Image (cartoon, one colour):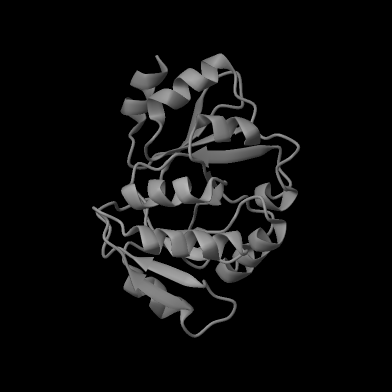
Length: 211
């Protein structure tokens, strides 16, 4: 497990490229976001997703949320009509994970066998730079053991993973994150939008967008 410090305001390209290479090879990378530290693998590689679940000690029935680079990438993973796309342009990039009906091409292991998938575009320089290098969807589950509170500091993540196996291959340390909670969760699969979890984006803010 390698730990590399990265500048959150001006992320070093060579570090971003190294992280992208690890992910392309099926590895797991801890990376900072606009919410909490995430644990990322290539979301379209089933064996990489299976390893992610083992690292997190997460039940295979629990779906993993996914980061996308843009709405076009999201359309390859989920069914998005014009009305839904309009909502996505309002909440992305940002701390809102949107639950959508998935396409058949999405690996079953990624969604825990469910017909839905949670997608997000992060509003954070390091994450956006990584997505540009990867050009593939990236898992966005929090970098902690399943059932634990997510971490805002890379040092805490190193401490919990350094004595266990399997563990992440690389940790990008951007220091302590200013956010304090996972993303807001918005379900757009039903006849009406449903707020499943309130996070950095409040219920009032979402209701204003959804009017």
